[in-house]
Image (cartoon, rainbow over all chains, first blue to last red; front, side):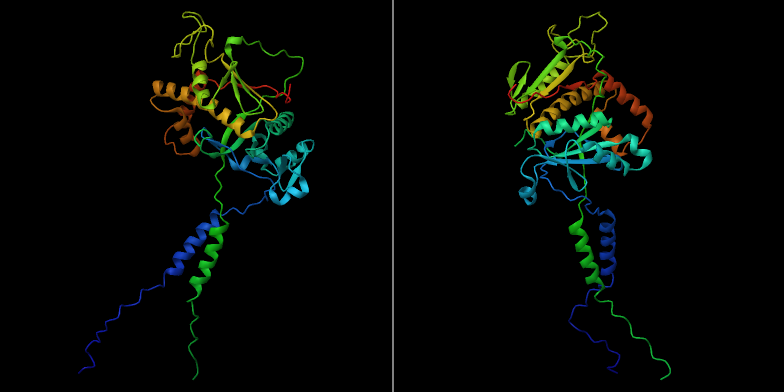
Length: 157
Length: 207
């Protein structure tokens, strides 16, 4: 009758890993949904200055302008002076209006009047360049602007 | 041998494939969190219009030179003292008691040589073209901080909450209650201390 006696093995039962793929898939979907693939390739240095009195940016109605010295990769080609980048290419101050109008047209039509310009400017840039940009913005009547900054304060270092 | 059971597909490597994808997305994800100092630019005025006259005592001039040094009201100043100086200027309330411009919520020194009331007080920032952007933002940040401090104080006194916290809640959609009423209250506070920051055309370096 030894047939019916249970074999008592000392081994631990293996952990059931059948639900592992499910868990991983769940995580996978989460990251797939929140991922925003970078759509503009940064060609300037962009070490943002720090500030703490800040507001949040509404992304659906914003146009980005980057400015700063060209990053190391582009230094040879474009020199070391501060440059403006909109979209994927460098823009001159004189061309700024055209580039901005173009960028604005890519927004949803009902939001084009509420457009907000997000300035992402490197901390080492001269204010003169920023002022040129602001002057162009005034002429275009795009008066809302936000200086994108990093979290923190310049004072505590 | 009419029908053989179809062999089961081995799903053992499914987890591996999913992991691979997961790691790819983990690496490429940049959860963007863009925040910054919002500002409204002044529209271009027709050249015929005369700029409004502002009394000198109602003007707080902050000068930043090409070496990132601060000159506040003709005195050299460290950046860390700017906030307190701006608060003192805005909160001064120098108009005489009983006059129309009297500021009854100001808690400053009421010095007659400083600003009449927050409504009239204007902070003017002058930059050099060679001032670094970092410094520019730091100065703007300190000045906005001064306004926020005073607004917080007034909202605390009138409504029992902090202006900046409530505004943040409203912006992020965390506020549960009547948004219209809150917006009205926020506007009220803003009216008490309106943000009046002017920026002069930058001088060319060396002038």
